[in-house]
Image 1 (tube, rainbow, N blue to C red):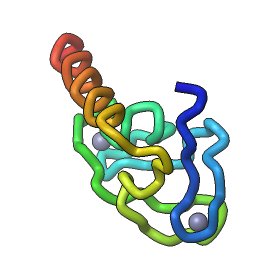
Image 2 (cartoon, rainbow, N blue to C red):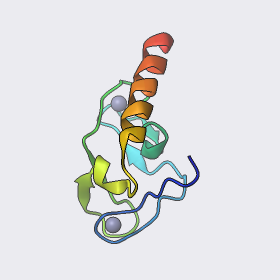
Image 3 (cartoon, rainbow, N blue to C red):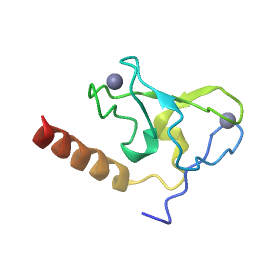
Length: 86
Ligand SMILES: [Zn+2]
Ligand SMILES: [Zn+2]
């Protein structure tokens, strides 16, 4: 997982692990921990705002630089975890 490169598609800002993102439900977390799925209300966010660099919205998927089936696999795993925790 460590070689996965994540950065803002517009300004190249790299997420530093802090919880900058707030869901519509009010929950605040690091969206890259869960591939943009809110851990509280389970909403899957399609767009992710750049919170520090350019403050623009980009598709969450565009933040991943070495995107392949890896991400789909992770999302499937996350969905399983979410199901268990319900
Ligand atoms: Zn939420
Ligand atoms: Zn940016």
